[in-house]
Image 1 (cartoon, one colour):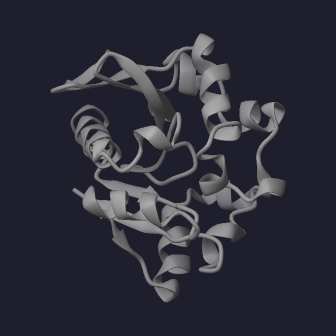
Image 2 (tube, one colour):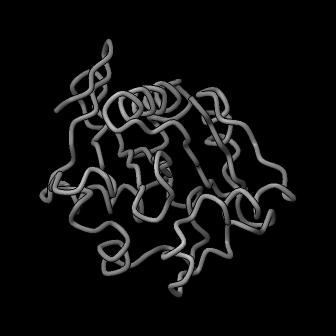
Length: 190
């Protein structure tokens, strides 16, 4: 199902979209805002992180992905992930196909659209974004969408309460979110 508002459409991503979505993330003029050069995910790492359910719609309770279409042109990707979080919570991730699609207010509008959709369809009422500290343009867009920064002291406690217990018991590396030198934690409650 497409999510539409004015000239913006969120079209469910398909398996065929994976390679272009990866290219936007790992090989475009926005990649340096998302990752340090040595941290850019390989194709295999991308496939491991963005499993089939993001692209085939089989497990919306775990997560999903959407192509951002603006004036009938695909310009980015937005996803949500709930597989690792307590009920009614999700983590969002978004990137555009290139810098030419940034700083137009599209990102913040898309985030609000997805939050509204997830609240009404999956009863999600708490949203997290974990952006790189080196991406102030994206952080401004998230704040325009209603997200608020969480202090360093609160960040660890919030994430420990929000991550599912079985996920915490497994060996997942979530240390990057605890460091203010790498990433911020932004939160929005509806």
